[in-house]
Amino acid sequence: MIEEVVERLNMIKMPGSIGIGHTRWATHGAPEMVNAHPHVDCTGRLAVVHNGVIENFMELKEELINRGHNFTSKTDTEIIAHLIEEELKGDLRLDDAILKALRVLEGSYAIAVVSLDNPKKIYCARNESPLVLGHSELGSFCASDIPAMLPYSKNVVYLRNGEFAELDEDGLSIRLVEDGSPVSREYTEINWNIEMAEKQGYPHFMLKEIYEQPVSLRNALRLQQRYLDLLTTFLDRGQDLFLIAAGTSYYACLAASYLFSKIARLTTFPAVSSEFVEQYGSSLGIDSVVLALSQSGETYDTLQAIEYARMRAATVLGVTNTVFSSLSRRARAYISQQSGPEIGVAATKTFTSQILVLLQLALRLAITRGKISQDDGDELEAKMIQVPDFVQSVLDRHGESIGALARKYLDSRLFIFLGRGISSATAMEGRLKLLELTYVPSLAYPAGESKHGPISVVEDGVPVIFLCPRGETRKSIVGSIMEMKARGARIISVCEEGDAEIISLSDDVIEMPRNIPEALSPIPYIVPLQLFAYHFAVQKGLDPDKPRNLAKSVTVP
Ligand code: AGP
Picture 1 (cartoon, rainbow, N blue to C red):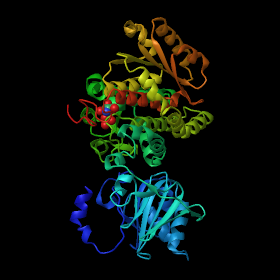
Picture 2 (picture 1 turned 120 degrees about the horizontal axis):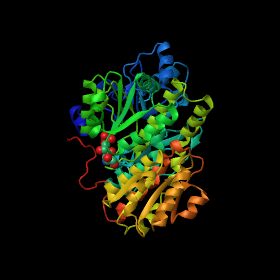
Picture 3 (picture 1 turned 90 degrees about the vertical axis):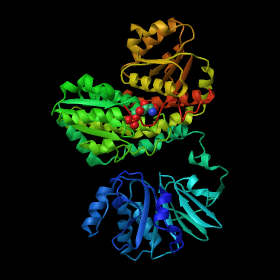
Picture 4 (picture 1 turned 120 degrees about the vertical axis):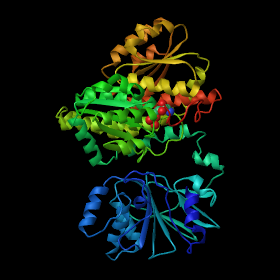
């Protein structure tokens, strides 16, 4: 707790008029004292705090070590301090040295720098990670978000990507990182109360987190290569690969099982953690690999399952959003998905990032095993990089209109979600969102299976939501739509923009960007379903952040 730190270090009585600090969400290096911010250069004269992920930190670190710099932490942040130190060895002023150092950084950052060489100033910069600046009679301030700023200043400036600022007691000035040219920006007055501010102006954490997905997905594309390599090596060595998780994380496993099969030609066994030991326990051995997914890294069933797997000498791997969680401590190797904190009980941004992480693993494995041609691999990678933009365009286009769609179906007493292939995982996750937030009974099935039973509940007016990305499964989904339509269902389709056939068969359509490969479709296609569940809950007068009977992390049997 920040209050504890303030008290223990007696910070109020500390001499001086400037300071920087950062509550770290561990991305590189465990949450230990040695990795805590600020980080300093070799001289100890310059200190940096940083929120974000520096992609090229390994290369930069090696270069700096070769030039004689000593590193004390495992963070990516520390390289920033040493880079500035290196630039200062020339004749540059401190501000110019910082600007020069920033120009070689790749990735996301919001930073604040202080130096004994100019003890009255704080220098800040931003690329992708948020940073707000403020000024009042109390002084000048910078913070990641408005809640931290509010007690000190209601007049704020949102620093934009590629901007650098200098703060002192008189105010602030902004320049472009690129060429150092000055930028003029008006202050905005913030009239939010603290609760609104914590949600950054969104009415609920869930909506904020849905809208954060373009950024969290970009961070998921910036994973540390050596950990991806390490996991790929373990996956490659294993004989049987089990993908285990609970709830939403399980649906990410389900989607991943299609990805491993299609991209890496590898058979995997997705299983819910609570069933895993019963279902597969006896077949586990030294050649088994168990890849566990857990946002929190603390889900009881998942931890129990990996304990069992470890006991049978299987290799346990993890993907989690919580570095140093029980899962990351127990896994032989793990990847931190870097989605940032998720407060809403319903998982949203962590689901899309989990899939993106597993997609990268599948692609790597395919390349390692020679299961994908160079052209196909390059093409998939090029599309993968566009995923955050696909999601952004879905949010731009449907962010508001899905509210009206939810209103239209507010009286429905049953929903059915159907998809084929990898979209059956999207359908199940879409159903889970609606179910947990609105308590409206609903079913989700692979569309082909719907005729083996679920179709019996379809009658006049029952809404059936179809996931219909373009690709191998689209043709058969048309058949399923016809079957449901013939029984009076109201068809809501999530399909590619301009897909005339699907549109003509549907009562309502959510049109998605063109040219999204089917393998990538769960990520953008789940977004309108997250929004649908959210708006449905709000319009029913329910709190989407706190659904009844549910906890964010289920740590009990
Ligand atoms: C999803 O919206 C739920 N809150 C829940 O199903 C969740 O995904 C499940 O409890 C697993 O949690 P984990 O990813 O932290 O292990």
